[in-house]
Structure formats: structure tokens, C-alpha cells
Length: 229
Length: 229
DNA sequence: CGGGCTGTTGACGAGACTCAATAGGGGTGG
DNA sequence: CCACCCCTATTGAGTCTCGTCAACAGCCCG
Picture 1 (tube, chains in turn cyan, blue, red, orange):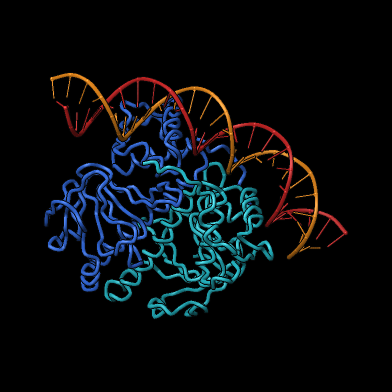
Picture 2 (picture 1 turned 180 degrees about the vertical axis):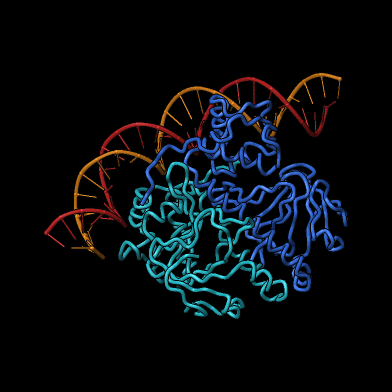
């Protein structure tokens, strides 16, 4: 946990209250610069984290030098859980001023043993994280680039908890999207252009667009193929 | 939980003892036919499960009719955890005679509140499942088919806990592998042929092969590409 | 004002998917 | 017990998507 200005006991704004907040004295909140590491792959997994605001990315670097983003972290997302003693992936802030809260893992686990409410909350959190990753396996398995990007827009719209008519705000770069979907940047860009051409989205700026046809986004590229059994 | 012959309090053989086993009276163990559903997508998530022996698959059906296997379940794997009230995916036995144990979720959660050891064990299980899915996101993100299939062989070799020189036994069909890696059956078959041709594996039967060059399997297709961004 | 970063678009080629044919195996029913 | 058939696995040929290389425009920041 080597980072810049540290603030104690500061509940992040805009996030619903949490049983974990009652353990404020244990928590350590800090503000990160863009690209700043929260932890590195191989670091001892001493803490659990929650992203307060901004954007984070959990990723691995492939032998070829290519980056694979395993999970994009939005406000309220918990991360850093691992069964092993060391983090298998790295995590870093993807935006300037990203706020991250850290709890010491050992102490929290001890407290959970005496406080069922905390224990249940932690189970809930890991299961939520699990659901996110399952959805992710599905997204990565999608056949076409159009379907991947379309599904990504819907996912982001849902995860940022915006109304049906509200535009999606993509705070991450095209490179982040590409590495998240295992596509090239050019393909992501082309897919967005194509979705626009087909009238599924209307972009105002490159990082903000309105979803016109949500169901189309989900189903694009899903050509009727017979089920392989 | 609508299934054939039900056996109570039968600890599955070949699996290490578990705190959960002390709740035998709660558990319900059953033997499944090949292709038999354990639960369907949309079913109320009333139970947690462990696969005793055989093989299971957790999957989703895409609009196009294509199947995406979200997780392959091996002996000892726990599954069925979800944050929601309903299972987002379906799970079924992939082999004849697959043995599955089910615990009622509500009761287990109540017990976990009073027994820290059980609570910790459940946390551990979900986190293990989490790790498996993260590794999966990585596998699906791999670029080439050769790399996907190579990585799959290594994953199966590790997960079945066999010695370095022991052959990998693939109890699942090529279709299962294809749907797991989001490839077509033909591509999987061709990749295996190519790996054999390159001397990375030596197959005895279609479902059993010896890994000769493990590091090659991992790195295949990882052509040196410059890091995006 | 200049330089690097980001985003978009075009041209080209490699790799994966589809369609198709064939061989082997296991299970079922006659 | 045998024969048939369906399921599984493999291989070939053609098409098409996506990755790569390249060029270019806009923007922020120094």
C-alpha cells in the first residue's frame, strides 16, 4: 500500500452506507493519480479494497506484451479478494483522482468471525464480484466484435445505474475498452461507428452516447446458428 | 431439486474432508445421468452445490442458439452461488453418473452466522470460484485458438491434480471444449492436431494425451505484439 | 506553438468460422 | 449376437471477420 496522500475514516460520497463503514478506523482511503498502481501482480494480498469514485482496472500482461483487463472497477465495486497469499493480477487507477479505500484483510477476517453481519456482508461482496466475472465470461465469449461492443455499452449503462433514456458515459479510453473485450482498438472504433450507422446509438462526444435500441445492442452479430451440442 | 435416486449423508469419495461435511444431515447427494439438469437458468437459487465426481457444466444459451459454457465443474468444485434470488445460468451433468451434493442455502447461511468456521469456509469457497473465473477471463481473452486450446490442456492438467508426467484426461467432448473456449469444434480439433504436429503433446486416445512441452502450450500464438496504449 | 496521446478510417492479409464429407465407436434394438 | 444408426472426431475448401500496418485529425499539455 504505497501511495500518496492518505485520509482516514472518510466514507466515500455517493456510495450507499455499508456495514464495512463501521470499521472506519481500520480503513485507509487514498486518492490516486491516473495509472497509479493500487497493487501489483505478485504483491502479498494484505488488503481488500473498494473503489469510491473514478475508475480502476484489474489486468494481466500477456507474454506478448499485450494487456488483458480482467475487470473494470466502478464506484462501489469491491476487489482484491484472492484465495492465495499473493495477488494474481495488478490493479491500478484508470482516471486521475480515483478514490480507493483499503481494509486490512487479516483483521477484517478476524472481525468477521465474531460479527456475523460483517461475515455475511463479505460473502455477499465476493458473490457480487463472482456474478460480475460470470457475466464477463459471457461477454468475452461473444462471437462478433459488434456484439461485444454493444454488450459492453449496455453493461456500462447498467453498472453506472443511469435511467433508460440517459446517455452512457464512458470514462475509459478506447484502449481500455479494447483490452477489456480482447479486441484491437481499431475494431472497437469501427464497431462503434457501425452501431452509430445502424442507428443503435447516437454519440454526442466520443465518451458519451445515447442508447437508442438496447435490445439490438445485445443481439447484434448473433446470427442464428444451430446449437453445437 | 427434481432428480432421480436420492442418497442422504453420503460423503463423496476422493474429496478431502470439509467443514461442510459436518452438516451432512442438511446435504442431499444424488447421482445424475449425462445431460441431466442440476438447475435451470431462472430457477430459484435455493441451494449450493458441490460436484463429487464426474463432470458438470454451467452454461448459458445465446440468442443465436449457441451455447457458452461459463464454467466446467470438476470433482470438489462448489457452484451455484449467486447474489440474486435466481440462478442466472443453468448447470447440468456432462457425464453419466456424475455425483452432486446440495445444501439448502438459507439454512447454511443461518448456520454460518453462528459458526465462524463455516462462514470462513464459505467465503473461501466463493473466493476460489472467483479465482477460477478470473483465470477464465484471461483464457477467453487469449488471441489465437492454439493458445486457447494449449492453455486449456494445462488448466485441465492442473485442476485434475495429476503429476507433471501424467497424461491429461479429457472427460468432456470436443463440443464442450469448443463452447468453453468460444471456438468452433473444427477449430478445436485442428488446434489439437497442430499441437501434436509441433510436438507439444502426444495423444494416446482422443480423450487422453501427454503434455510434452508445457511452457510451449502456454505461450503458443503469443506473437510478440507491442503493448496497446 | 509543438509534441505526444487519443480516436477514426482505409487497405491488406492471416486466422477462424461455415459448409461438407468421411471414418470410427458405442449403444440400442431386432 | 449382430447390425444399424447416431454421435463424435477429424480433415478439406471457401468465405468473412478481425488484426495489423498506415495515415490523419483533434486535443490537451507542456
